[in-house]
Image (cartoon, rainbow, N blue to C red; front, top):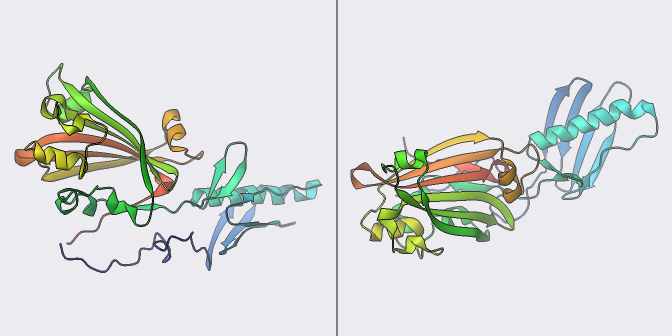
Length: 286
């Protein structure tokens, strides 16, 4: 595939690849609320929430990454202002600019979203030469894979159906968590037929250069086609804890099936992504 200049995306600022924090300068957002118009303005070093109400207004100024404190009023005249400021903070949370932390308050979200390149990352030109498919997302980021377990389990009905297994067949289940720049962002569970991978590196925690797909190729089952199904929902309690997800943040579910020649399914990988930590990019020709 011929390399082409990557166009600037409207979903992230031009400085997104520089390693710096978001450049929030010169951006503004307005929305109407029941109590009045809330205007939220963001600048590079100061975030300002202004509730323009009929009787009074309040402005909150905080440095980037510090707590956004709700206004403290001494009399009832500021009740509407407080409500407006709460609504303004709600706007920021909904926009992904701020996040709530239990018992601590509302904070500016400092983590720079990962760009998951759904097509390029699965190219044989990557894993076929010993590179991890996750390196396509890396840029200048630091990746740690932890909570790795490998076990042999009875195949769940939905997995057995996809892998063309029969009742009683078992699968090799590989579970792990991906942590980028110290932030947990993804949980992954891969299932492969035990009859296919028994005794191979796929039954060990470290699969070696090129990962799962390089090892499948060595077993004569090189992936030649992939299918990904994507949907979204709110996280379970366990998912929220393992991914350190803020209240109100959904997860993205990606189920990928890898196929060898003659449309033989060889792996099912179910992934749970922190929606606030990812941009899903699909770049392909017409």
